[in-house]
Length: 115
Image 1: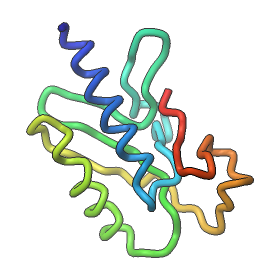
Image 2: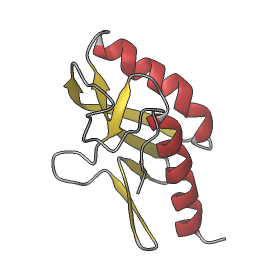
Image 3: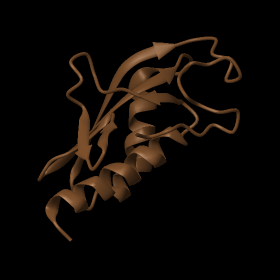
């Protein structure tokens, strides 16, 4: 397995776990689109895997204090990072999202396309 394949697998695992968290509405690649991991056929938006750390950009639901939300996300995702430090960036906050009418790609079951 090459380093690129390993990073892609790690990014995919982190992204899939992140979008299952209740506070996470969707992943965000950031203002300049830099939070993404290249993969065959595209990119994994919202996750960057570096040699020593992983960065995750999220859009979250309004309600709890942002540091508390970020700490919870970090706690849930850290075991997946292979010992790398995990940096969580809250890129946006939304309120009043009805999943049936959401344009984020999230389905009523809470799943979201990662790619």
